[in-house]
Image (tube, rainbow, N blue to C red; front, top):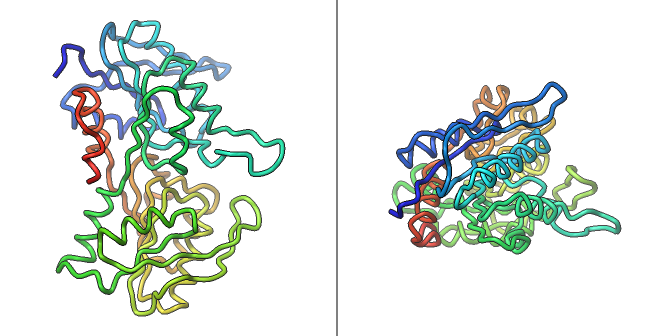
Length: 319
């Protein structure tokens, strides 16, 4: 390991995950006082020396997205002014990622704006998990390590559904055409069949399932996605799959945004189980929902940090 030390700091968005990452690295979580002035302004004080060290800020830009984003920017600036050698922002959930292009005239491209803000603040590298669209990496001029929850989910799926090595009764489902590449990768590794939900979005956060491409009759359907927001698409997809003869529906999604009435929809749905990671901490309502199960991404992120620090391959994590 190089002479420069690893120091991991946490904002207020997901301190539990940051603590688990530090435990994986076998180091204490860095001391940082991240607080608010009475008018809501963010104030950050790094309470230990970082001079010449490789520092990592663990901060998801989950709700409240604007506050968590500003916290991260101020933390970057504090570390830069404290003479940290490297400042890597570890953003398990990259907010504003859905606005990655101009879908209609006079729209902002906020995924690019966030990238510009992070770089302008002084970050020297970015690590994130399951971006909504992979091309966001190109918005950065600093190194970007894009991690995938695939190894975490694949292990769970194999233990739950393929204990005998047989996946003949499984079908991996993409909830839309944009997620086909992800679903195909799962289906290929599991030697399972593939199905696609053909949906039409009538307005933001409102989707209507139109058709199912592929044979799901008599099979256990595994929906894979990058995030669950309002759960409208997910619950309608489950209904459509069961109507076409699926024997059960399970959903695997990396980011549990769970906004609006998402938890209520999941509780009333025909889903057998929803499996997510801890990139975003669950609300009390989500924690109380018996259909939601959390798998930790701490070891995956911690291993990526270790490999960045030692200059070894990250891509081999997913082979």
